[in-house]
Image (cartoon, rainbow, N blue to C red; front, side):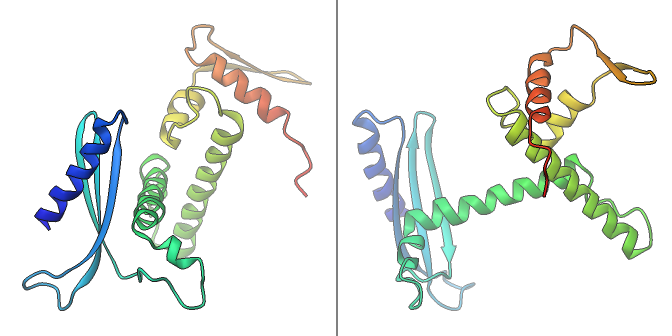
Amino acid sequence: MKQLSEELFAAAAKRCLCGLQSAREFKEFQYQTRTSWSRERRVVGKAEVTAEGSNPRFVVSSLPASGFKDDPDSEKRFGPAALYEQLYCQRGNMENVLKQQVLDLQADRMSTHHLASNQLRLWLGTLAYLLLERMRALGLSGTELARATAGTIRLKLLKVAAVVTVSVRRVYIQICSAFPLQNAFRICQERLMNLPQDCG
């Protein structure tokens, strides 16, 4: 495995020296450990060379390299590059989304001894994430919070000190003029106000 890794890095480094900012090389092979694995397994190796240095990754997969018989496109989807970039990396993105729900929105808090109330709390945490995600996608695109996590949006855009005055006809919200993200707040508010009202 070490020899293969060195070969991959040599190929990636060669491409990087030709003027590219970064270069990736993929290779798949069969590998078996000496004691812990009962059989050979398919391994996809990625060698990436960037300005910061080398970045090796190895992914063990049970998905067949030749694809499935009933799915003609599966050979492309389970090739070495696609397996790493579309399946393995997307799994990491999904874990980051779960982490936002758990850490930023306390979706994992089970405060009571009753299953139904704990389930409701989990649903509310999921709904809160979906609302923040739509707000980020529809209201904050192109702003400094376009790629922010749910916790960052909560902290910097929603948990803001304001004076609220309620009259007979209106609710006035006055935010401090020194609020650093007032431009992003204004853009988001205008975009959300202009969304179609028909939800059906």
